[in-house]
Length: 148
Image 1 (cartoon, rainbow, N blue to C red):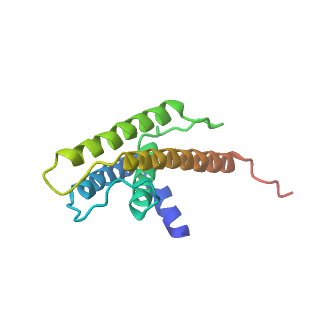
Image 2: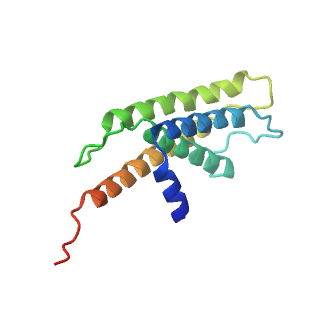
Image 3: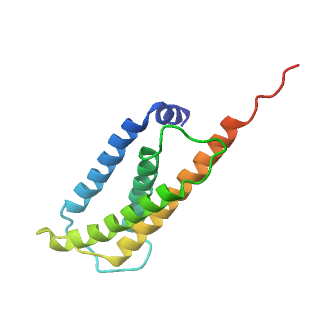
């Protein structure tokens, strides 16, 4: 886990832009793959809904980081404009992805519960990113302990 954290810390904004774009493209590809025998709309928690939450949480985290300016002011504050933009773009993407599944000629179906799972994932991803950044900036900005 520590190696993964070091890897992500070593990436800069352009790398995260590439990762975020590839993640978004991956979601679009996943939505396009025909799925035989899709169940009818069921509000129960299924693996499909968990996958939607995870995909859109990742989408939110990667885009929050990809759109981060190079200089982070200390003390760090919540980037409300970026939170709003990522949330609104993710919301549009979630709804558009359900409409997209209606118009493609493959065996896919739109499910409002999928869109709800997508929005839950967006909120969880944004919250996780904000909490992580707040914690790391607070830790990095603390004065070093005196060794006298």
